[in-house]
Length: 260
Image (cartoon, rainbow, N blue to C red):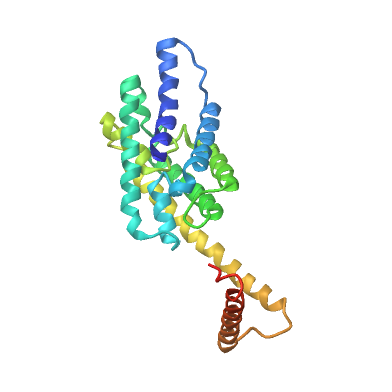
């Protein structure tokens, strides 16, 4: 559902822009408006659907979470099918509403293929980096996350809209390409580019996270004058804790019944 709304609005903005200019003679949708609307749409979708599915909306986001070890590989096909279906169905709805205007919002290079390819790598790298650093487990959910991801996404739309179309999402480009039967010569840019950007983001995230973990361990040791507990000490403390809990349960059960 989330991908359906994302494609509906992002592609719809482009189609409404062209429709207003050609059919109505009104040109009120500028680039800044597209970026702001896109950012607010993504933030709103995270608020709305983050608690249900994590609101990935993007196959490279799903795969990035898997590579970070926080997403079940068995769920990847289900997420990808839902995302793909959402993109295709949104493109079909736009076709029914506006016809084949602006190639259904299909992303296409405005410059050279090489520059568009580089732009897709870069914006996907930035987007995935922000998502991984603000995510709660396997979700991009939460007030800070929604605002951060939405704001960055809006800025990336402004940055790359007139270069590559600012996709950063293979299915966002595939849906209009399939329904409109267009853009096949350059579709590789919007599949391979985001994948490379995602892999680079995961690699950088691992490099960043490792020093943090090491520093946290150092701080934990420095903050105590005692030596770090051994495995035997940990087991003994755990055994005593369990025994203490059992004693409390037995004493409570005598008067009030056992606690759940």
